[in-house]
Length: 419
Image 1 (cartoon, rainbow, N blue to C red):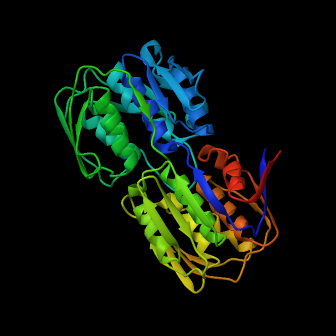
Image 2 (cartoon, rainbow, N blue to C red; image 1 turned 45 degrees about the horizontal axis):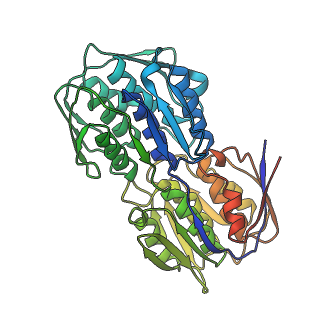
Image 3 (cartoon, rainbow, N blue to C red; image 1 turned 180 degrees about the vertical axis):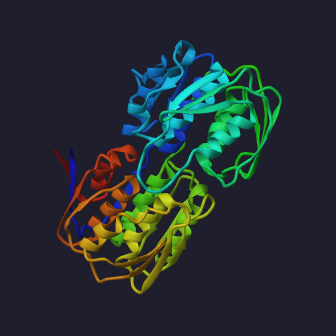
């Protein structure tokens, strides 16, 4: 099991390109199940979660692997799928693997997928997925930890989600594109990854309108074709790197990401003391003065992303004054707080709210990552701390960040991975 060792105190400076979006990639890989020919995705990050999704697709019978001539591309051909069942030992590793349910049901009329796993950051039920698939004509059955859905033919319908759900919106949208008739999704998630999936489905021959708003209209078609698609840059990785630069009073520019999807994060970094330069090709954050405390509430897009909560908290631990950070999405996403406290952070948690009083500096310490984004938050804190920090259980970070230690090292960080 690897660990990451950081010698804190180095000021980060320079330019770094972000990898492709993990969350967009996983949904697009699931969408390839809908196609009657090969799909090739480019700008795919080399991540543990992508490898897991490739394993799941192969377990279904699809031909799915990394491209032989492009280390950041995958090839998926679903024509050979012969067993529409995603097994527990794979699905338990990653929540997004549940996204194959809708495409399997639409394409083959049956799907059996284990109830999903992933980071233990709170309750994330799949009831909204199943509600939508049932509205389209799927017959849902729960069987010893598996979800079984069958249909004699999906039909368009109105689906009103009880709350915005990214994976739920994506799953039902992928099923609806091959349903007969029209489907309308109300209270749909508005995240950029939903928009990118809709755009890719339309390139495949689907008819999806309204993605990016809370009402998505879908006109069913008979079949979809495989495509070539370049995955967008990862907005959470970009924001994490900017936060790391800010925590070290540095000067960091990120490229390869649509900066229009970073607005809520950039607003809070600016409020905390960052001087920002933003254009169509990237974003630059720098500061020479003190950081300031801010108040933040995480929320679905376009609100401040829950996936950037831990990283911003790390920045605020060394900001002047007090901050209040409320987690509005998941009820158990403060597991990194005790680890930050080991480094000298002054944080008090009450329910879903963290009260942070900035300290003059953090101290390096051995810490343990509890989930993907907590790992990133601890690395941001380690970069700002005095002395050595050892981050254990970094397999979490390998699920969502491609070679993060190499990118940080290119910016001047004293960071290395050890067995």
